[in-house]
Amino acid sequence: MRKLFLLIVMTMLIVGCATPQPTVTPTPPSVAAQPTNTVAPSPLPPTSAPPTPTLAPTTAPSPTSAPTQVATSVPIADFVSAKSSVWDFAQSPDVMSGTCAKGAILPPYGLTELAPIPNGLIMTTQEPSPYNMIRVRANVYSYSGPSPVNDGAVTLNLTFSNANTVQMTRAFVPKNDPNCTHSYMYLGKLMWVNP
Image 1 (cartoon, one colour):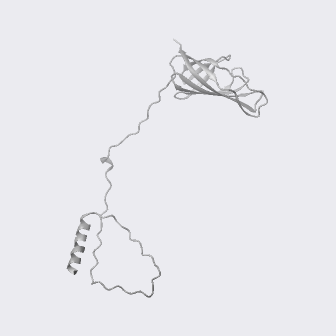
Image 2 (cartoon, rainbow, N blue to C red; image 1 turned 135 degrees about the horizontal axis):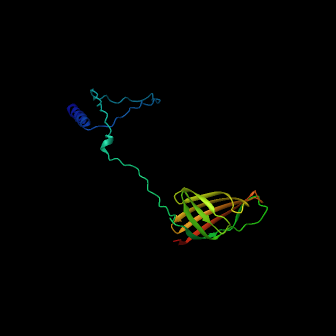
Image 3 (tube, one colour; image 1 turned 90 degrees about the horizontal axis):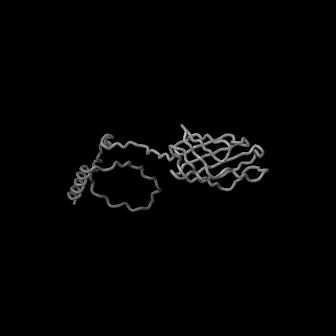
């Protein structure tokens, strides 16, 4: 019986040493109250404790062994025409915020010309003079300043959704009602590109 036990232990040691085993960190045994009236188990024949196998640390794969991927950016299509174009702008109702002493204001709408300039657009509406919009990024243009008739401050943000559609927000604060902001949302549809 003892020989069989030693043979099993030796086989386990040989097999255990041949295949790497994960490193196990022993945890200290918890101290618990031991019963005082217990029967001691029958003693086993004395054996020598098997040696604890030690494992050599493994090295990580070399970074040059894996293919390297380089992040690239996808260019954004610029939908602005190289020539001036005419758009039909329809606007939402006036949304007033703040303390408004006056009523709703009907802003300009209808046919609008967008003409490209270096780093911007000239937007000509039904108002007496055009807006000089600056390019914020591809397909996004902005204007902030006085209205063409100098009756208040205007902020415009225009975004090309595609080559045939633009969206624009307009915020207007009139001089005669400075605590009131009139906000509008426009949707523009391409009518034609000038030759």
